[in-house]
Length: 108
Length: 121
Image (cartoon, rainbow over all chains, first blue to last red; front, side):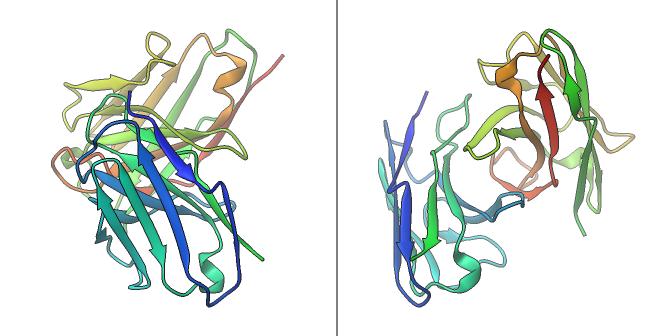
C-alpha cells in the first residue's frame, strides 16, 4: 500500500499570503497524484490531477508540481474561500487508492 | 448538471447491516466507474470500494473486504453499498463519487453530499 504523508498538518496564514503544501509518497507514484479541497460541511472537490493539471473550474492561483515521491500544492495568494483542508490522493498503484492525512489551511 | 444523492445511512448496532444507495442524474451513469469514499468526522478521507461500468470488476479496501459489497443498477442509475458485520470503526460519512473520465482514471470530479453511518449500541 502506498502511504501518502502530508505536511504540515496545519498551516496558519492570512489572506493574500502564499501557501505551500507538501505530499510525500512512500514509493514512486510517477505523476499520478491529485489534490482535493474540502471546505467544512462539504464534499471534497478535485483541484489538481496528474500532479500539475488543473481540473475544470480550478482557479489559476492553484498550481501543482512534483513527480515520483515529492509533490507540492501552491496557492499563490490566498482568497478567503481557500481556507479549507487539502488532501492528496494517488492512483498509481491500487487497490487500495489512498489519500494523505490532509493539511488544514486556517486563518492566522 | 451532474448530481449524486446518497441515502440509507443511519444508526445501527455493532454486527448489524445497512444498505447505502446513491442515485445519479445528469450524466450517462453506465459509462463511468463509481466509487465509495468515507470520512470519519474530523478525520481524513478513506477509499472504500469501486466498481466498473458494467459491474464486472469490483475492488475493496482491506478494512471492508468480505463485509461490504458494492453493486450497481445501470437501468436505475443507482450505486449501492451493502454493509454487513458493521463495527464501530465503520462510523463515518459515506460519499459516492463519479470517476472523472469514461475510462478507469480513479479521480473523482463529482461527489454526493454524503450520508452518515453510525455504528453504536
